[in-house]
Length: 400
Image (cartoon, rainbow, N blue to C red):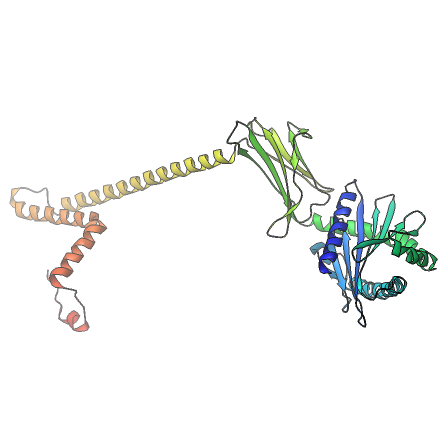
């Protein structure tokens, strides 16, 4: 039964998306599902759909209408959500009466009964549709002009007559068309537009991908956002919209819950800023140009930049080491002059000793880390590992 329910809802949503492609039109749908069984209360649920997106869902026995979109959660106050809960419960008892009438006429005690009630509205016109299904088969369809039901199967003929004779049926349908549909659609349209104004614009990417078999480039534009309904995406060349040889993908989900669509065309031109990907909504215009480079060229460029950066880095390190050596040598010369290294023959021994000390000091500074480790290992092998204790430290003498 669940599979049939989801298939019915999906078909209705797709029907709505196709139907609302006309400019400035918005569609509101109520999808009812009732599952009945002998001696049990029927299971009841309402799914509310706006412009192809499920915005709320209510089911028995809680009769709580719960939001399914972030923007719709903010569209109603707490009191308005309570009113929607009461609406859900009232729809349950209303449809329970109709279901009992259907079951009595066609002599069934259990099964799946569905209803899709919708309306499409713009600034000037309002239209509605209403369909019933029993066990995943078409049953009744409303004539939107006469507001009379017509049967879609032989079993539905007697039900059609009964429904058309119900005194409350026609006023209920008229009320939905004239009093409920358009105000609700316009309110949802405004709430959604206000929410989108306060949130980030769509993510937009444009890049080229080389073709291995030819000199052409696959130019691609990706647009990603939580709500793609009403967004117009176009590829332009030198300011002119491309309407030929452009492939447009259907919306596909991302990992973060947003949706994406892709525009793609083939080109042999690689001049920058000639192609642009443009996104337009009621209150937003975004355009990004292609830089003329493919992903392969960008990867090669990034590797070259990385190589040049490494060379510059090594050159700077070498210069720094050279400067350190110059400073050290300068200090050694100053120390040598101060200690009389350049004195006469009388201080020959002292001078040699000072030179040796200076050289040893210099070698100590520039000794590599490997030499330190090598000497330390040799020392350990000859003397064995040395352990310093408090007693050793006390008896240690400094030799000058």
